Amino acid sequence: MFNRRSIAFPAAVLLVVGMTVVMALSTILTLALLVTTQVEDRMRVGPYEFAKLLRETIERNGPGELKFPDEIQSSTLMRMVKDQPSFWYIISDATHRISYGPVRQGMDQKTTDTTVYSESLYSDGGQQFMGVRIAVSGREGTVVEVGGISLSTPQAIWVALLAARSGGVYQLLTLILGATTTAAVLIVRATIAAPVRRVVRSAEEIDGLPNGRQLPCDSTPIELMPMVTAFNTALRRIDTAFDSQRNFLSNVAHELRTPLTRMRLKLERIQDENLRRGLIRDTSRLASIVTTMLQLARLSNQSLAFTAVNLVAVARAVVTDHAPIALSRGVNLSLNAPSAPLFVYGSEDAIYTAVSNLLLNSVQHATGTNLVTVNVGYPAQVTVVDHGPGIPPQDRNSVLRPFVRGSRSSHDGTGLGLAIVAQVMAVHGGSIALDDTAGGGATIRLLFSTKTL
Image 1 (spheres, rainbow, N blue to C red):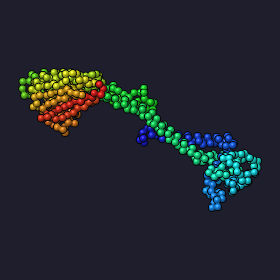
Image 2 (tube, rainbow, N blue to C red):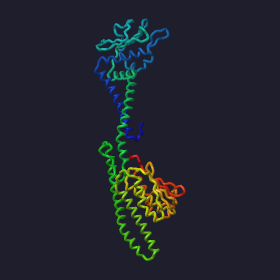
Image 3 (cartoon, rainbow, N blue to C red):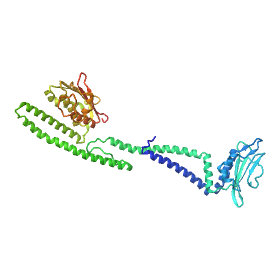
């Protein structure tokens, strides 16, 4: 039921041990109270328990005469009373009688009394005793009489404890302890686990963005507050460090755009065509890297505002906006989408950026293809299909990391496009799947989560 590393395990163990100790002590204290405050109860314990012991073990020899049970000689009770000078007992039936000790006066005759149980107080040598008479069940006319027993308080408590054991009290207490422990353990487990689960659910909802979710403090138990406070402090420190890095990245990329634009204009004046073309290509690549870094910085540097986003409308906007670039490269764009809106919960700008990067990636890298198709389908997915060289299976994990390009890519790209797409899908709780296109090429599918719709 419990793992030893569970925080509920020591609590359950302490609960069981504590309940056991309390029940044992309460039993002992109750018996001690009875034998110390009730004089008759204290005097009754010894003779009554010894009479019961005789009644349950009485024997007869071959001729049918009564015989004192040998096993009683080694009993705890016999060891307590055998040296007491006033101790006596009588075992008798209609024809036989055996006795021991200074039998109480007036009880030395056989009796035909059929009373099941009786007791009486008497004095002997200035000391008061109790005599007990018990009829032996199943043996009509056989009785056991015991008296002259004087026990100290500890002895009386001990004998009472032995009597409770034989009377099934301990079994009852064990049953009660087991039932109570089971119920209490379940309650302890639920009581401890409930707030921990709430903290875990809150931790799972942390989005990792700046000023994002933190673990709640208002509903957290006091025992978990140090952990929650330390965790939130660590999150704030991480946010501070990430803010510095993101701001640096964003500022550098932004500052580079203006000089790059000026550089491009100046390069157009170079008379040497080959030199001009090479420099413009390098400058364009650098500008593309700066633009992509800005996109990455914007995605990482803000908590995205999530709303209902129509994937059909976003895909149509991407295809429309990038049609001129595709046509300039001799690539036709095609959009297959349902007529009805298809909504997901997310950031429209981020989703636009992801689909845009996928489309540009196919247009730029799929050398030899003349058609790139964008499909929008149910339950919530956008697929970009090209007929270029494709992405080898061994490259499909690595190309989702920043600055990594596929081994078949002939275009001198930045290696950031698919990394941005993967980051957008991670923020939206979705995934990206890379497959082969039938007949050759790459099929890249964006699978959005629909659980929050």
